[in-house]
Image: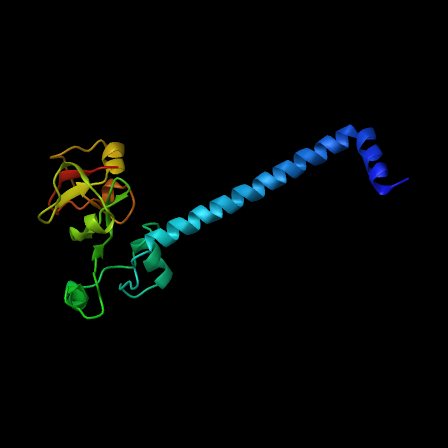
Length: 187
């Protein structure tokens, strides 16, 4: 009796085991395919976020934490540095730096970060204004579409920020000026 015929007879006489083996095989192939797709998507997103960034300058602390907070916005910031310390890097005629984008992180509003930066960030991320305009002065805000929707913010709304990333009324800056919503970005 040939080995193929023996294998075929074994499969026919044990249909439950054969069905279970086929189901487990299909689930295994599907799971491996899913993991490979997820890995590819995550790697593509990470690479696209860092596409134009060659240097990140920040306060002393963990370099990984600085990258995660400033580039991916998923960790607590390491702290801010004085603008006078970074001003040479912001010079548009710097011979080694094509463009620079300052970020100041630390405060939040109801669990969403407030990012202090220049208007160059709009061009950097290819953003468009849905309504209103970009901020022009300190304490003026242009909100992201998803944040505006989640917090039901509209043009002219005022609020106070909280220190850190917690949604805690005790951490609210009582002495600080109110932020004013001047614009909302497109999704």
